[in-house]
Amino acid sequence: MKSELEKLIELQITDTNIRKLKKAIDTAEERRAEIEQEFEQHAFSIRELQNKRDSAREKRAELEKQIITNKTYIDRANRNLQGAQDQKQYETAMRELDSLQKQVTKLENEVLEKMTEIEDVEKILEERSEEVDSLEINRDTALKAFDEKVAQDRKEFAEETKKREEVFATLPANMAGVYNRLAQRSRDGIAVAEVVNGSCSACFMTLRPQMQVELKTSGEIVTCESCARILYLQPKSEEASAV
Image (cartoon, rainbow, N blue to C red):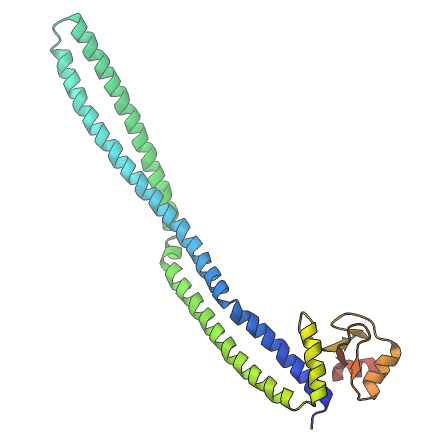
């Protein structure tokens, strides 16, 4: 039959796991949103590139349309130049022709810039094509794995809660009350702390030699003089101390 101390240690281990599982369950929605956001950031950067390419294509088409229109005006200006009746008409036609040719040259340079921009973006998209293709699959896989882990945590939480009730019911009422008070008073829920290297693992206070001997030999419940938690030694710790 387990001693009271063994039951308390088991209860503490169970409670610690319950706290960890509860935190994981309580923050599951937030953590799932973070996974979605991470993938959304990748998708957003790709969409930005695609939108940049599409915008550049539209601008290029618009520029090419302006070039065609201006070349029509150039043809008209050439006809006016050839049909000029006097010096004034000739100079007017020349100025118009020169202005239109400069506009066409400017537009053609802008078209070349847009073509370069489109090629650069398409090169990046090509390099990231595998990422684009796998993004949705990876997202679904990650979310599925996360949901499965949360489901497992919920199942384990229910099992550990049931186990806690069973262990707690075997404790004497006064000991159960002491455990609950200590656990509720502590931010980390630790009521039973292991002694490691001669110190309380909860508050790190070094135990007096007499207390260490008492822990090893008395078999009674010993509490930390600093934080009042119930103390225990793992068998391996006891053996190591005896060497």
